Amino acid sequence: MQYDEFIRRVQKNARLDSPEEARELTEVVLGTLGERLYRTERNDLAAQLPKEMKGFLFSQQEPEQTRQEVRRFSLEEFYNRVRARTKVGYPTAVAQTQAVMQVFQEAISPGERGDALATLPDEFKELLQPEQ
Image 1: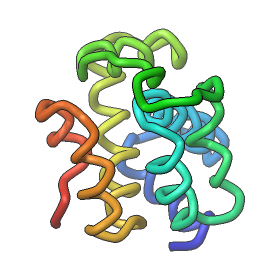
Image 2 (image 1 turned 180 degrees about the horizontal axis):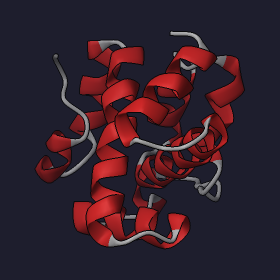
Image 3 (image 1 turned 180 degrees about the vertical axis):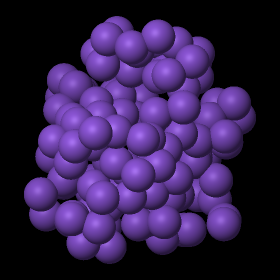
């Protein structure tokens, strides 16, 4: 999927006013996802994104040395981090996160989604389904 199409679809799905808002939301959501993944999974997912978006998965993550150093937080905390970074209410953060992740899932192969999902708690299945 090309960058412009990705952003256009996020803008439409999240009902945002501009492509810039869609880009900012996408960066926040993918950055938050990146916090929850080890660098191997982040690298594998980033490799399938448009070049303009490859860094989004790394935007919130400090480099870690081991899998044990990856930040551990729940899906609720994931939504709360998106809420705080986008300065919207919790229900809006949930809806906007799901809008981004819907497009993200279409841009990433089922195998890579499954690999990433295997490293996350089961509750994250609502965001990152291994198959569509």
